[in-house]
Image (cartoon, rainbow, N blue to C red; front, side):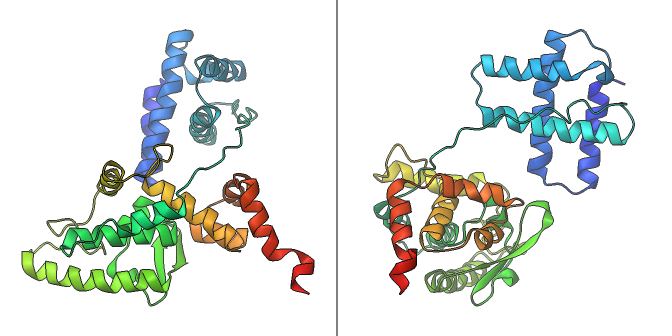
Length: 304
């Protein structure tokens, strides 16, 4: 059976297992990258003809072209999921990618916003119209909770409690995230503005999520939130070396939480990481000054 037919079946299985749309798209894109390489480099008609050596050659070709280890690993993870499915469905007799190890990724220092830039972000949207109040709360919420864009878009009004949020993250797993007094205050302001705006537009098709579009619908894509940060980038003096984006807010939240004394296990739960090793990247990326500042607060003799 040709790879295209098997890939269609695998994608259908992913949909049945209710994987996120983004995960499924990532799988499909990356598996096709490998299959294009196979078609250009080999003369195979069946998936079963691909052996361990071919995966190794593929990795070497990607490295020779200058692709980063993280990018190549993303493709390998998609292929591992695909080949696990093929093996479990008995389309292949041997899962030859099982022993292909992921590449060692270089430790990256995660650059985030400084204190002045955080002040800029929090004060940028200061008008009284609905969209400005909404955008202001989006910025506050991303900085105070470390949410992913998709998670923020999916929060419903009844998921907001006095001092925490209920969030449905990757793998349809629910978790709770504490909220600060500052964020709670902004939520109250927004909900009043939201109620007034709904009455104003008199729409019969109001979305059920906390954050609504100008027409009163649910925010359907991450692009809307990305545009908020693009506007801030264009109109402020945030450093060019920092990517002003929702995900950088997540990085800032994680690193600041660690600096403030949050333990890695609780932080991992709050961020919705499936593996604590993912959270540990934030520890590894802390600068010497940040380690010193945190360490001075917790040295054993300092508490005597």
